[in-house]
Image (tube, rainbow, N blue to C red; front, side, top):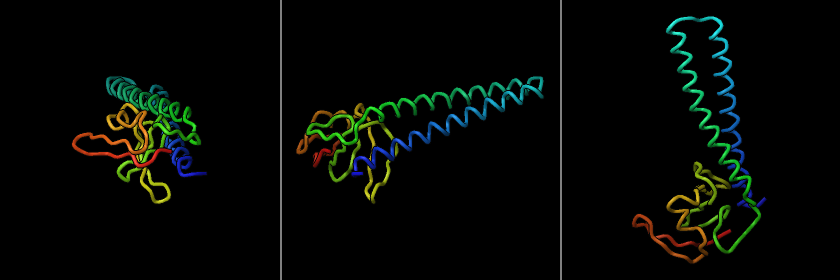
Length: 149
């Protein structure tokens, strides 16, 4: 497995783990609300139930976001290498590795830090379609694309 495949695999696992956690939390809240409904009555019960529903909605939105991120990652072929930067490219710019895919937390693979960023982000937008050697500036920071995988 090459470096880019390791990165892709790590991010896929990270997103899948988030999906599993959100599903478990939603399931737990659903179970709690069913159990709570059996034994309580009155205003306190209604408030508690309402709070559970609000929390459930928040978790459901986070779950939808994680599922959407996984869908984007699933469409990427980590073996594909192009000259121009596309979604799925691993770009080295200013000594920083950038994985153009979806916005996810920074990870470390083989002792090297990697940042996953969305093609829609300001930096991602400047990278898309360009090649190694391309230079640009964002927020007074000058970037040079060193390599594209």
